Length: 279
Ligand SMILES: [Fe+2]
Image 1: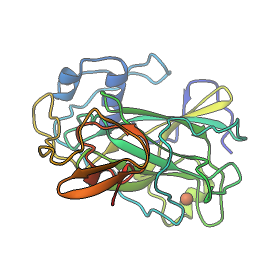
Image 2: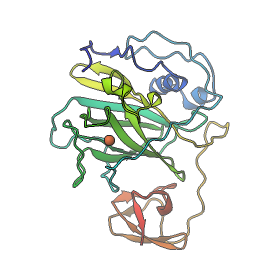
Image 3: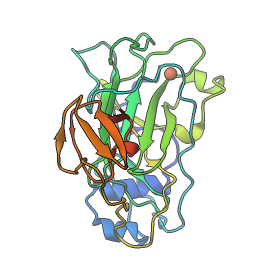
C-alpha cells in the first residue's frame, strides 16, 4: 500500500506532467478551447487544486503518440450499463475517482467518445454473471469523463489495473488498461506498460486518478473538427429515444437496440456495438 499522504498531495513517483496533462489542466481551468487547442504556448498548469508548482507549458501542435493498446483479457462483457459510477450498493473498497479527457492526434478533445470500463472488485474478482464494476459512458462536449469506482483488488498474475475500451465516433475501438503508480507488481507484470500509468493522488480516505487518452484519430488544424458521418439511410434517426429490443434499418441492414439510449450523430448502429447488434 502507498504511504498515507495529506489531501491533495501529488504522487511524486507518478508520471511527469505531459503536454496532455498540461492541456488537461487548461481545459479544467476553463481556458477557451480554441485558444488552448491551437497551440498557444505559456498556459501554466493550474495550481488551484494541488501544490504542484506551475510548469512551463509546451505547445500542443505536433500531435502525440496514441495511447497504446493492451490485451482485453478474459473478462470483458458487452452491453454494460451506461453509468459513470460503478458503486452499486456501497461496496467495500477504497473510493477512487478517475478523471481525464479523450483527445485525437492533434490534442483536441473528442466529444461523445465511448468509454467502457470494467475492473475487479476489492477481492480481485470480476463479476461474470452481472455487471458489478462494469459501465460505459460518453465524454462530454469538452471531451472529459469521470469514473467513480473503487481501487480494484489484486488477483494472481497481474498488477493492479482497470480495463477500458475507448472509441471515438466512427472510429475503431481502443482496448487498453490503466495502471497505478507505486504498485510492487508493476515490475513483474509482463503486460504492464508505464505509458498507461495514471497520475494519482490521495484526497482524505479516497484516491483520485487522472489519465488522458489519445486516440489514433486525425484532426485538422481548425478549432473544431466534428467527425463526418455518412448521410443516414434507413429508419435510424439521431435524436430518437430507442429502447432495448427496438429495431431499425441502417445502411441496408436491420439492427436491434441492445440498451435504451437517445441516438446521436456518430452513433449509427455499425459504429456502436454496445448499443446495436445486427438483426
Ligand atoms: Fe484484469
